[in-house]
Amino acid sequence: MSAKTLNPKIRAIARASTEEAVQKLQRAGADAVVSPYITGGRRLAAAALRPQVMDFVDGILTGTDRSFYMEEFLIDPRTCPCVGLSLSQAHLRSRSGALVLAIRRADGTLIGGPTGDTELMAGDLLICMGTAEQLRSLTQILIPMRSDGLRLPKH
Image (cartoon, rainbow, N blue to C red; front, side):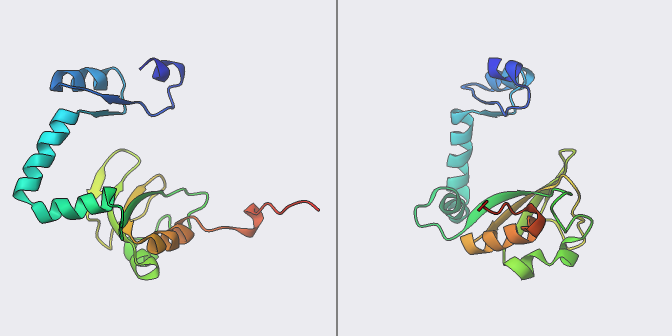
């Protein structure tokens, strides 16, 4: 956590072995705290109760022959032409094939399974899933390359 004191903008991720340690690290300013024991317990329960869901999630997150990936996209008002549009107006799914699973608003609110009426706002973080090609297409839609931003080599 001393690195966070030196640079408050860095993302501090900490490891904790107990629930008490998780709370202490969060109070100390950790942005994320991972407890292998708590996470492991939850994954064991999920694997027992929903094995097919866990196989799918594991395949997306860690599979060697993955066909689907998950990615985050920041809605930057300086570059994204979709700010202010609803998901249905932006046609992200039909144009890229990628699926918007959730949206994290700038204020921290999480919208799981957003509907077509959900408006894309500046500072939103889109959590998306798709094939590598679908996510590349989505990148081109959300972060288009502009000719004024190109840096051509000098002759």
